[in-house]
Length: 403
Ligand code: SAH
Image (tube, rainbow, N blue to C red; front, side, top):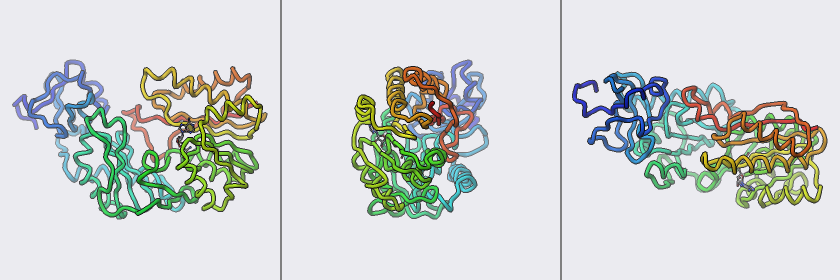
């Protein structure tokens, strides 16, 4: 790698090496002075400072604004099968240590950049793994990675669900199907915190289940004893199941996806709850349903959970997203009983915790309610954030008591 031939080196512009030295995993096209013509997309390339010092290496994609995703900062480390195995082993070991596997067999096994495997997401669902290749560098290697994952975990199959819109920016189309081993022939049952859930690995949202909320479901449930709960943006009802398990009186679930609500009904029943008596499932737009209720002044809830999808997809869309967060929170506040609990989330990486708190403050002011933050919530331990990659932090939540 350290030959004197300049044309096997990607060279940065002067003064652009600091983030690389700080181990930020991305190199944007604008930081690059020279790219050898021989580099093929997906190749592992060495990155040098303008002064000719080796800095790091990573995989290359000429089609992406993020030209290189860095893999190693150790000059003598080859990026070979042993490298990928070592990184995967480290990610797997972390989950074995931190996730209580007697209660939970669904969690994120590999969290991309934050597990030092840029572009690679792997979620475990019982005996299966679901892989998302977010970049061309991973897409090229996905069959080998899938086989390695099976070897390391002893699980039955790896299914691909690479349907991220961000793949466009890498010059890739969506891809899905079986990558290694065998696939289930329908939805499978997984467990989380001792409860059972049906997950459709081929048709569910994202990779099938929102594992990032696991610990938060437990926290929120602890406020739900004997409560009338509203679970807005319920998906397949995991917050509802935990709330009922903790003694909630009744949980109303709203989601726009009928398919998700059908699974929610099954999940409630499978965990021993009566989907008609103890719950209600409403297919609709949360904004519209809450506006209608708020106008009618009914019903009233003791606990409201707001877990909307990502509203902010770009800086340009940020203001609109903030208005969306404010509106649902304002409506929710109007529907809470005195001393009620508002649990509110944002999974938009572009909305910082501070900004999110300001939005909730704005909603409280407009609703003319006093609010106490009693807990701050984050993505679970299986979704770590590498300190050199703050972009990896996306989920934030507040549990508030509303006076
Ligand atoms: N709370 C869920 C995850 C929510 S993901 C869980 O714990 O599993 C966001 C959900 O919001 C998705 O299920 C999606 O179908 C739904 N959704 C998106 N926009 C919506 C809207 N305007 N009204 C109702 N549901 C919506």
